[in-house]
Structure formats: structure tokens, C-alpha cells
Image 1 (cartoon, helix red, strand yellow):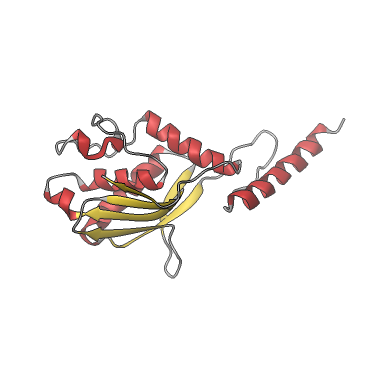
Image 2 (image 1 turned 30 degrees about the vertical axis):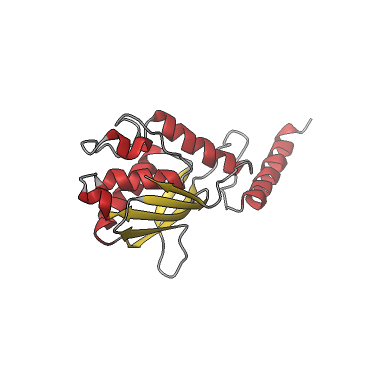
Length: 187
């Protein structure tokens, strides 16, 4: 039997099918022993995030260090971003149009009340990555948001939150992701 050539053909066919179904480009497998997929790149535009730019970049870096299935990158000049990040005077919120896409508002109201800007950024990016609020919740849960209190400055997702993001973006490589449409999350 010629199982090895068949495995290569099936692997290539699956990669093409996933790319067509998922609408995203993924790295092809290099062989039967290497079945991992490259991280999906999600770009963000923080040019309108005003004084919160460093906090947004730090929040993205935290997610990049926490999960492997998705990578948040600043958008290249002249390109359209998956995520727009804006500063405004309201409460922080995220408008998710689909998994990995939407608009984040870093609201000054929460900052003026004493909430940590990096935690806000990480939390709102978590919504864009498919995570719901978990209120009330402890400080160890990033998605507990404001219910953890002003003294909570933890910007890191916990193991369950990391696993949920990995699962969502891992299912994209299999063409199975069901992403929310037009979901507004106000924290």
C-alpha cells in the first residue's frame, strides 16, 4: 500500500478545503508528522486609541504570549484591520462582527473610575476573540471585567479562557467556526 503519498494528498486537500471554507490562509502541513496549523493573524488598528495606545499594544502582546491559534498584529500602513480600536468617553465595550473582527472602544469612564487600562484592553480584545463576560467573577478571570473591582489589575486570561480561544481558532482550521454576528459587549 502507498499510505504515505495518500496521506500527503489528503493533507494538502484538507488544507485547501479549510482555506476555502474558513476564508483565511493557513500554513500547509509539511508532512504526516507535522499536522499543526499556523496561527491565524488578526490585525488591529490602534491609531485612534489616543492615550491608550501602549495599553492596547500590551493587551495584544499578552494574548500573543497566551495562545497559539491566533496572533494579534498591528495593521500595516494602507491595509484594512480586522479590529478597530477607538478611545471615547463612554464605558469600554466591544462590537464583534465576526470571530476576530470588530471594534473595541476603550472608554475613559472606566479609566476615570480607576480601572486598569491594560486589563481593559486585554478584556475587550478577549471579546473580539470570542469570549463572553463572566460576571460576577474573580480577578483571576480576565473576562470578569469590572465585576472584579477597581483594585484588580490582572490583564492575563486564565487557563479556561486560553483554552476557549484556542478551541475557537483551532476550529477555524477545520472550517467549523461559528462566529457571533453584530454582538455588542458592554463591560
